[in-house]
Image 1 (cartoon, rainbow, N blue to C red):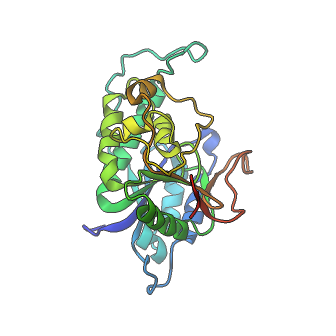
Image 2 (image 1 turned 180 degrees about the horizontal axis):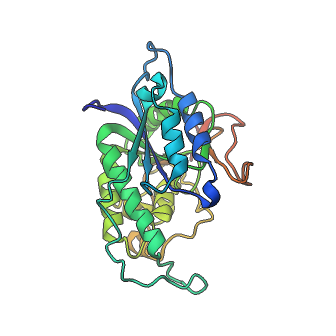
Amino acid sequence: GGGKRYWLTVGIPTVPRKGDVDYLSTTVETILADMPADASDPLYGRVRVTVMNNRPGRHPVYDRVKARYAGDAKAGLYLEFIDNPGTYVDPNPELPDPDDLNNPSNRPGREVRQQTCDVVTMVEHASPLSDLFLFMEDDFRVCPHLLRATEYTTAKASAVQPDWLAVRYSYGMNGVVMRAADLGPFTAYLRKHVAAAAARPAVAGVGGGVAGGGAAAGGRAAADGVQAEPPGPHRQDELLRSEAGAAQVAGVLRVHGVGVEPLGRGEVRPGAVRTHGPLAVQLAGGQL
């Protein structure tokens, strides 16, 4: 980036899959296809897609995808391939893994704690680069017009609910847009509770409007006139709920008709977000 300030950074952490299954190629292909190629476009060169390899030296799919785009002019404008520097690792490696069949507090094990550390590393690397940050994973394809939808919905959100916290297009850790100014409290929360709270439900809480997201993002209260998304399939961590109390995420807007959808076994998994229906940001009093 050379100190350049971007409008949006898309963060894609990646890890190798069993049998070196390649989801990353489709993820990168679809998001690069959505980037403007016309230099007269207002968003030309104003988006940075950061693909962070969380297993340096042990991720051949990442190495192939990185090599594929070497020397590509459009990729050079938008894509950044970096290895996780390993500056933040599990601070509690001595903790035993929980029993997955008897874990009522949903305490994370070593692998999940390291995932949380990797999310913090990604966000802290990327957030100073731009005004907005979009959480993505390496096994989701980008639906057409995501960039335009993000421009439209964030502008509308700022007009209707200036204190909005997140705009959400999908579920889990995918398709959640946050402003850079809100990422500091969020990563501080993850650092504080890395041994007790996983990043995935915390991001889901911020993006989904469930109790706990408010605590993770600075304890904002619910905003009048905004309809938060109901809790999804991921059960929210008890610690997040206890710290948030009755607080809900302020200004979480759910976007329908555009987003990102998961990849797996050569097909889109059930429940994927599809590009159908009108683009709409749902509010308590109607739609944008």
